Length: 139
Image (tube, rainbow, N blue to C red):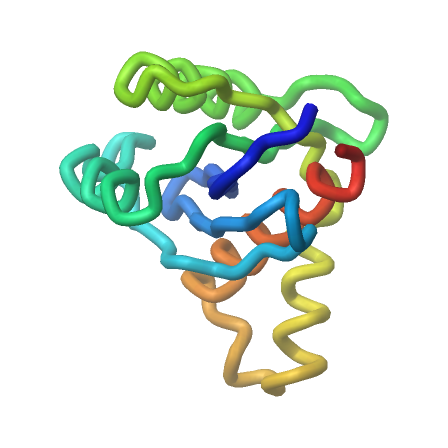
């Protein structure tokens, strides 16, 4: 599926949600920010501001599943987050396997910026980049 315009990716977590944007035209993605959650929910007012700035055409949400492909408790919360995204912004949401995205994010951050860069807010937004890149490579 070819999308013209911005694609927005999310790395959903219990404490933080990493956000990145990308384009199918260039097959590239970049980190935007990491939002803290309260009771597993972002501040939807901030989410709306981010949406209005970037005006994405579709959302890609990382799906946290176990190595063997089975669901874990976070999987169900991620589905709930995805439903809220769709309900709030009326855009299609695609779930993207995110196995190993956090490991890859830590590896990239350490390689380019050293140990001090391994902070949760940076890891989550880079994980969102990796999730988006994985989806872009499939399209």
